[in-house]
Image (cartoon, rainbow, N blue to C red):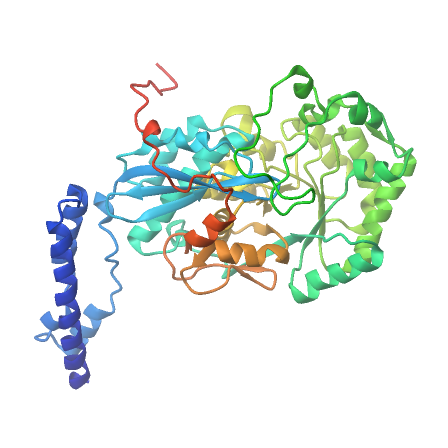
Length: 525
């Protein structure tokens, strides 16, 4: 045993000499910042090499070499120095990833959420530069007033996530450990139900989703508008919204039906009264679209076919019904009742508590909502009042709108006290996915997490590198990093750049957001 230790000690002494030379060279480099130089001096003094422990007993030597103290950072001296953004085209909306830089060379990443204006995050740069990212909750309380429901919560959520990533890296532990530990080693995922050219083709794709990709939970769209488009007489008042009002087109992204998106910046949309009064901007009760008995039968038949393909064991959730009031959803819930759906998602807007509660009480199918709600409390009540009023059976926060990792855990914990499970909405990037994975690991009532489907696994795998060497997901479950610090991923820069629009910026400097001048951010006098 002593011979082995002597050999290890000599190898360690040689490695230590090389490391000390590198540290001295960086300290002497005029380009090295004062903060970085101070950190390097501490790193050079910290830790005990095996070569310096030969006077210790074997037991003490082993204790020293196995204590697993992180030397990646000096956490108490860590400070934020910069915030930058990269844009990645994905799905119907662009996804934007932020990177927060520090005085010690480590960085943290966060996701602003699909379809969010990157300025919601860039605006926060001047609020956080100079702060220690390990004080995550304090930073959240400083910036939370600048978020709101919908995509407006994306900037705050991205910054909060990046701070947790930094904190985990600085301390050398996974984020779930910082949240109090984990309840699970892997997280169940739900995927979209694939469509097909016909019933036979869909059956093959559904079978692949279950038996090959391994998903144990599916979600299908049940659009009243899609039924009506091929079956006249299915809806009342639908044609007015189709032809009497403008419906702004969603720009095609690369890889979508409709061809390649042209290079360069997209055209700037012109605001208009007609656009504001369009179907997409009209709240559900104000369309007065109704489903006929024929339409209800056709929608129920779609559910029946999918249930027959899937079998009775696998839960099926439903979404994207169209904009109708709670009376139509009560009728729909009763029509699909025989097929045991897992939930009806985002029926009427979440802030109409009385309408949601009326639907919930009239339906034996669970009612689920929440992907656009910001924070547990706050303006318009957040999740707290929705839970207190018992308006839903399942809450469905999107972490990158809800306020980030810790706020989503708080939402889940509060719902748990009311006996309500938490499903987790996710429609962004692998960065947001991993943030959800850590939150789900630490939240007992986390039910299932959205993953789209196995068809994006290859694309996602190319975007990031798992630092624990495991894949993002396997057979319908997300892998929770058991040892990798922070989020447990790093960005694959070359792959990300190759997937970006030609003229997009990739973590370019953002000096224009450094200092907005003196601001008064307090909400009280």
